[in-house]
Length: 46
Image 1 (tube, one colour):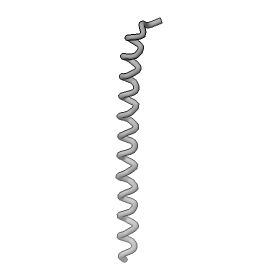
Image 2 (spheres, one colour; image 1 turned 90 degrees about the vertical axis):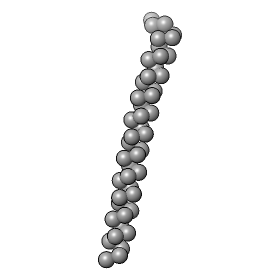
Image 3 (tube, one colour; image 1 turned 120 degrees about the vertical axis):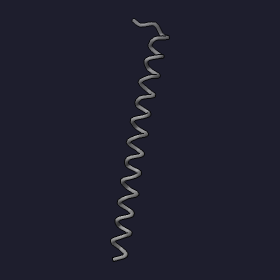
Image 4 (spheres, helix red, strand yellow; image 1 turned 90 degrees about the horizontal axis):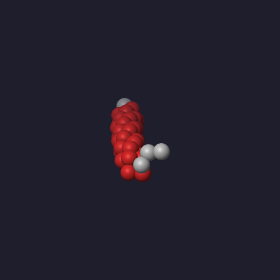
C-alpha cells in the first residue's frame, strides 16, 4: 500500500486533470450551441 499522503497527492492531480477536461468539454459545447443559435437566427432573416 502507498502512504496516505502519496495517495492523496496523486488523487488530487487526477481530479484536477479531470476537471480541466470537463471544463474544456463544457466550453466547446457552449460555443457549438451559440453557433447553432446564430445560424438559426440568420436563416430566419432570409
